[in-house]
Length: 295
Image (tube, rainbow, N blue to C red; front, side):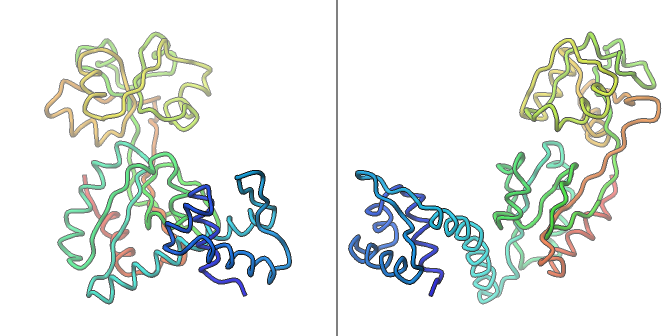
């Protein structure tokens, strides 16, 4: 009764905003599309659209089928792409979503040896999902999510692959450069530079400053790691980043890491995959290689 073609029609009408535009996109005539919809509504026993003037609006049943279409069609399209790659002699494409800015440098350490080992697998890194990775993974837009802050959901598995320490990074000329560690109040008169992420997702606020009811004098955001660290090196502010990243840049910039609190701020990088893909060989090997990378 209800098949994939019907779901594709519903999704396309929602995307295009009109029956005419959807028909053009689906390469059918408007009359054929209208006939298909009318027949489907008769079979289901309920209307899917209501017309108001020239506009179409989904009924409750229509909205429900739209949600089904948006959930199922990406999975079917992904399955077809994977099978097509296998038919062409490839193992597939590993689509990786990034949910943290500094993790990109870490990922490069894994991708190079992985591509050497898996010559029939392509890797595509999608940074547009930096702030919406969970939905992208559930929606089959990506196959793996790199994140330091996993949100556990049914159907997803997150594996810790790398332990690191979040530290304060300062210029060698900064007054805090000689300190073994800093306390939250030491940052009360500082300009704190972070990536453009919601404050509630920033560890320096959630795990260090806010529990002590301390805020920096000023909070600036910069999107790129290189420019952020150039600003810190020029004593224009301080930042909080993984120790391994600071030490890598410290070879070419006047930067120093300082521990956040006497015991430090431990963190982990997690790789998330769909539970249904847990046994895919080129995914499991990526996880194994990620755990073996030594900085």
